[in-house]
Image (cartoon, rainbow, N blue to C red; front, top):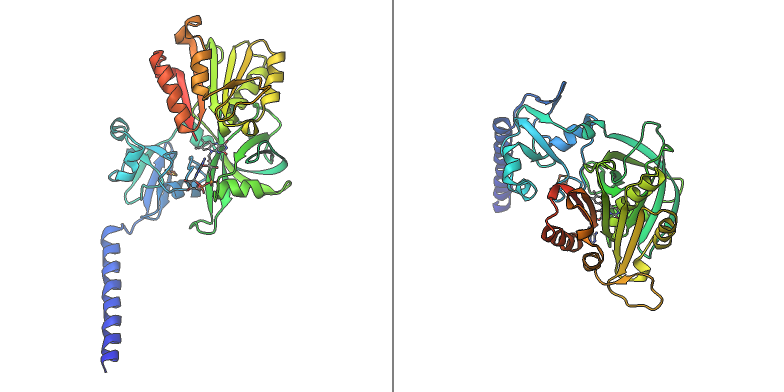
Length: 365
Ligand SMILES: Cc1cc2nc3c(=O)[nH]c(=O)nc-3n(C[C@H](O)[C@H](O)[C@H](O)COP(=O)(O)OP(=O)(O)OC[C@H]3O[C@@H](n4cnc5c(N)ncnc54)[C@H](O)[C@@H]3O)c2cc1C
Ligand code: FES
């Protein structure tokens, strides 16, 4: 008897809960479609959908390096009106000044009211493409070079930019996640790009990219990147990096030298040990061919005989090797790419030298 009463009470409780959920859904989630406006384009989506997915469904591919988890800050957009209150998680990547200007993280913004967005041209220009993996090479024990041919003539990128690879993911709601990878080759008209991918233990994207076989096709969006190569206005370009931070630096060096620019370019690159170093011979050969290019390599964790580079952390090597007094500081430009401690170390040096922030671009990864 008690069991039957218990079952009846349990069913009653479930029904009450369902009624509460139904009423609150009717009360708090608007029943009419939500309008999203961007310049002269307007489209409608179901209330409650997140902005990142809504834009993707409309072929507007904004960057999203963490798969919508709110941990990369790359999906930042500017909201002109609507969008509701900003969430605490968004404030990790958006400072007070940006909040005032309407910055939001698209993956965290649930569409509950009509919204108007102001998106940069590069997001509206980014497209989804397919590419065939044509060759691969292990550069170090954990860094793989992958060369892709794009199946579209309109694909072109600028040096220093990155693409977002669509990685199959069974646990994601959509069945995929995106990961960002910088292009590691010169701008070209052959619809080809190279990536250098470091294998991260248990990492979704890097493991998948290390395992895919040649001749397989991948899907990606892009290109993306805010940095602009203004070679004619600069006196000297200094590139400093470590690990897979090499990719955009190589893309810039290759482009500058292939286009026969006279702009002096200095590359500083750090690795832990000799086996972690890659493209060393490649850059040394470029150095012997081009008077406007120089490269300094340093090993931080290994002292070896017959090593034709420096020893120590690359920011310390840079501080000793680079003579700021030789240059007009207003015309020096810096592109830094690598792990956060390396970037922080260099930023400290550049701040002591009073290099204006708008002459420094950095990507931490
Ligand atoms: C603009 C941009 C450009 C990038 N370019 C490159 C590139 O050229 N080459 C490249 O290899 N990567 C690049 N990255 C990093 C890349 O997007 C991925 O974050 C990286 O490959 C790890 O992704 P995953 O899916 O393998 O690991 P995830 O599945 O995302 O992470 C798995 C676990 O590993 C941890 N983890 C994530 N990254 C690292 C790391 N680097 N070291 C140690 N632990 C980590 C995570 O916290 C997590 O616990 C770039 C990132 C950005 C934002
Ligand atoms: S914070 Fe990474 S996609 Fe939104």
